[in-house]
Length: 513
Image (cartoon, rainbow, N blue to C red; front, side, top):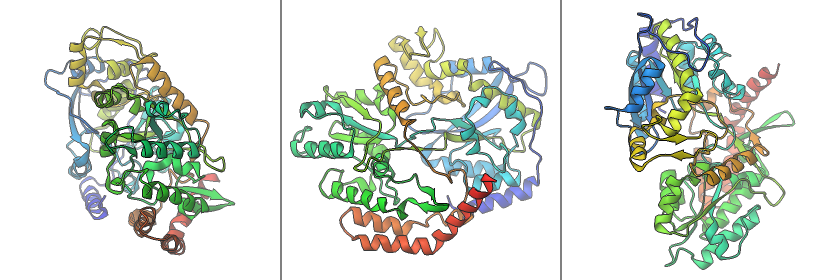
């Protein structure tokens, strides 16, 4: 994000808002708490909300039966604006600068410097006490709350997700191709590498079109689309504290081992030649086209919405998830992420009593009642019978079409905490396989000790690893040598990196007192 733009927004907020007290009182407990307008008992609260459309088409809001039911049950009138992800940040900038367009805004960049700065300036309500009075929101793990708080206060409500894995969690591989060549589902990096080589040599997609693995984009020294490979070499998750000192992942000897593997795989044709510039959505499209053997994603990849596309290209296509790869020295792991996607904030110009009702609405949205609507829709409208525990659903084709058109999952703004959030398949055996992958993650979580800490120097220099990215990318493409990478690591370590690590460590030590 352009920091000058945010500085201008911050100045505008300071001039137009001043210092605004942001804590409302009161609140109702219970997942069925209704939301009432401060202007009259029983009157629905009107909520203007801004949220993101991550992919696909937006919900059709006109005559939307799901929206009508939500408004009835929660006693609200919801005016929802759903904005595509590629322009969402700009929309949020404008909304915050204006200050009075929305009652509720989803911030998708999480707890970063701009969020902290705006919270300290009084741009958002302090919701600390309100959250304590809403039991469904209290079910969000303390770990997740700690990753979103500012100076120990709640200025936004996180949309909880699983703590382990995230978008680039683990490897998914074509099991039908493994079976074709009598290969086991890989458990080690050596077995996985061998499988890619067999795919390359035997061309199971036919016509020379086989791509053993897709990845990309290569836009940081971390190469995030290859996370499981990095952890199999023993890389820390971005940073670690060793012998009381902070260490960045690229300062470890394991980093070269990781890059050596990528270099070998890329130059040998095991990784898609377009990986350096391939966006995640493009990688998924290639994978689902039936000509790719493996990619890194989350367990949602096993959903029928993905596998059905693949089966159209190849009816024999079958996927299996590799939860964790063990490296040559016994290392393995999966990242422990922030535990949320997006933070709901209430601008401080919203009246306090209305802020209270909005928090109650988010609390209702995190109830089991709302979860059922999100996952299945309205009984008798979108389905005939639904079992939340198993995910089994009985619905007609017309009911499914209506569900896909109205998109209840987008209309339920908050969600209850569920470590199996991404295990969303409606096919019982697939759902079980997804849960098994997520369960295994808990045995190998790799924590970033500085995840919830901000470095002012890094905030002012978001491109601090740009030169290292260029050197490391050239290296894995076979266009450069390790000496160039090491030179950039040394320059970072003795320059801006030293200040960044000091700031992280100072805050880390202070939090331990």
